[in-house]
Amino acid sequence: MDAEEWENRLKQLGDPKLEHIEEHERVVELCEGHYLGEYEYLWAEHERERLRLLWLSHARSLGKLYMEHGMTQAAIRVNKLIQQRLPDEDETYLTLMKLYDGLGDRGGVEEQHWLLSSRMERELD
Image 1 (spheres, helix red, strand yellow):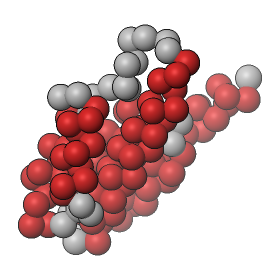
Image 2 (tube, rainbow, N blue to C red; image 1 turned 30 degrees about the vertical axis):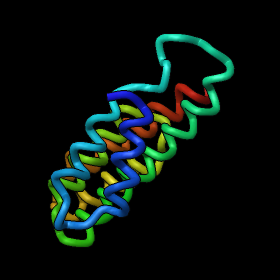
Image 3 (cartoon, rainbow, N blue to C red; image 1 turned 180 degrees about the vertical axis):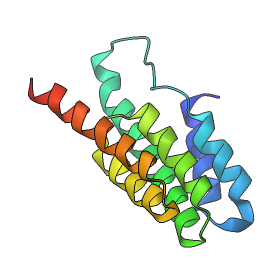
């Protein structure tokens, strides 16, 4: 699916709602890469960033909806996808720590803390 088609589909859906949750999940998962990511066109950088932020906003909204409805495992899944695709998004590590803490999963909390600490150390080096 091309970027324009993906964005149109996202606009048609609007904000995430439980009634259309499967479609929202598909839209989040369909956006697999960066706009013209295989090419280093300077003129495309702004569009890449705009689409990245659009995807991030929608994925976070979906995760928030899951959290509001006590769907912790689904919220974890979405936040792990964000983390996988955009590892520099610190908020995701903190959200995952809270979600794992809510489940009483100390190992999950510690893993996220370690991942965030390791990433920050690499940035400082």
